[in-house]
Amino acid sequence: MDEHSLVVFDGGSLLVLNDADRARVLGKTIQSVNDYFDSPLGTISNDTIPDLGLDLGFDFTQNQPFEVYDPGDTPYQPRPCRAEIVQMEEACASGDMAAVQAVFRSEWVEKPADDRIDKDQFASSFKVAIKNDHLAAASFLISVGVMMDLAHFKCALELKAYPFLQLFLEHGFDINEQLSWSEPGPLTAAFHDIELTKWCLARGADPNAECMLDKTPLSIAVAEASFPIIQLLFDHGGSANHGQLLHYAARRVLPDRLRVLDFVLEEVNLHKGPSINDIMYQDRPYCYGLQECIGIGTPLHEAASWGKLDMVEALVARGADPCILNSKGDLAIELARWYGHREVVEYLLPLSRSSLNFVFQAGSTVGRA
Image (cartoon, rainbow, N blue to C red; front, side, top):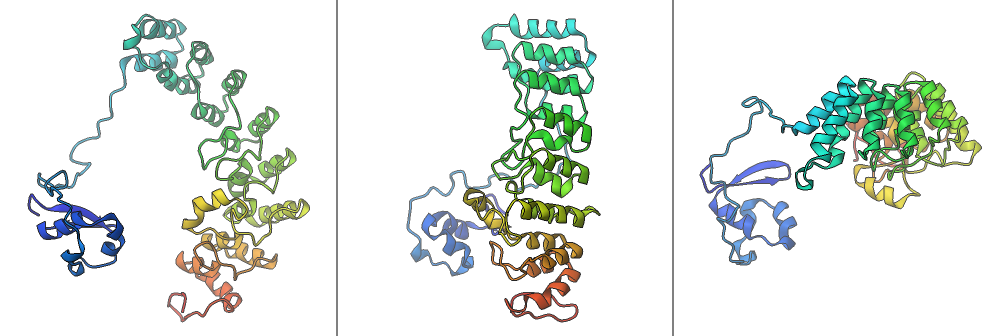
């Protein structure tokens, strides 16, 4: 590759273009980008490309020899942490309250405003205090206005650090705040211990608290938590009308998956919840729009993707329709084929013939005819 070559990505492939092709790429208008990517470079006529007067040397050329960075060449060098943050973490790790207060006084209170760091940069010391069980240090940080966040509460849950959890709640922490747009609140971090889960529920944790993507703590539980935790959440108001529970239960791979599936189905039927054949998020247009492109379907689609034949059989026995298409137009059997679950394909094949024609021979793939 010479110094005037241009590196571009075409459909995930790295292309190195010479001057002539480079000019065609850079001269293409936005309106015809799709035409370009749908055609070989050599078939695009210069007559269809307007002369935009582009300086083809501007920013688009690779003027230095093209080299692939090898992480092994140079050890990763993290950005050094500011000294005052390190000092505060060390003080909180030791539990020396005189040192904690001295660092804050000298590195924040007594510094000119223009030289101070943002006070919340000291928040990294919360985790240090939690891990070293120095409650007074965490309490001091809160008292001077350093903000704790979800990561600190989750850390305290994972370590079963009850005094820290109580401290955070007393200072206004919202136990039901979503961890992210696709993750529900921190209650899920308590599922490793039933007593800790009870403690959180007694203090306002909501099994139905949704994140933006309509995932609840109960959604996570039916997929991953122990059966007693699932029962506990339902006993504390857990609802089958939130969190796409049947879809998450269909993903369960633990040995008790059939028991959990039946339990969730009973709750759904008892409270007139979603149908076993509902498409995920079909009643949540915003969530559906976010996930449609990745292919969302029924609980049967989920079970077929995970390849658990017993779950697939159980869902079909309880009324799941194998002829429903997901948001990308695929049947459950097609997902099983895609992920290599032959037993599931063989089971679903006679149930799916009415929807498509298959070419199915020993050792061959299954797909649309």
